[in-house]
Amino acid sequence: MNFPLYSDIILLHDLPEEGLYAGDIGTIAEQHHVLG
Image (cartoon, rainbow, N blue to C red; front, side, top):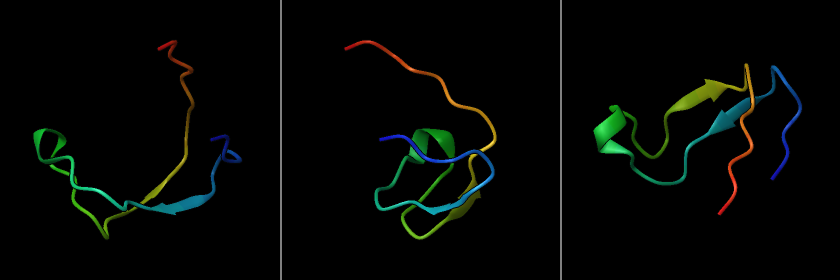
């Protein structure tokens, strides 16, 4: 998926190792494309 920079997003899945949980709101500030 490719989101425009500085757009708001809402997480759909928990990422507890990162301290992030479904429903958290964030802003796309930078994108990294990872192969695999």
